Length: 104
Image 1: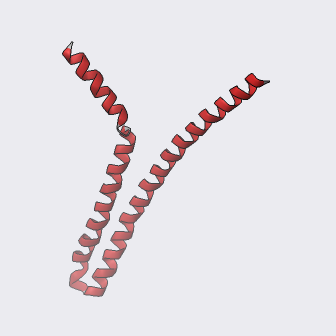
Image 2: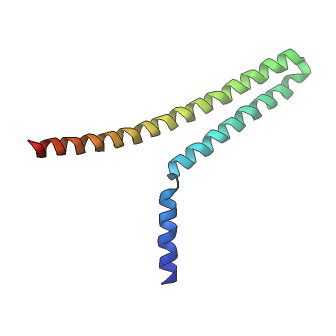
């Protein structure tokens, strides 16, 4: 019996937390920022024997590639938020339509 009570409390706690998809999106966004920084330093030190200016430009190119990943993840995150908001609006509009049809 104690295990069932504990599991129900755990289920309620999980519902209060963000969805797994949102957690995954935020994790991937952080990983994308880390990759952008890693790309910068990797290319910077790879091209450093050719001169500081070439190394810096190569690092910037690597950082831009990493930023592309960040932008893709953020676009996906915005799409998920937009979908949630549209579901809320649809529910509200259906309630308004039901109330108006009852008044007629």
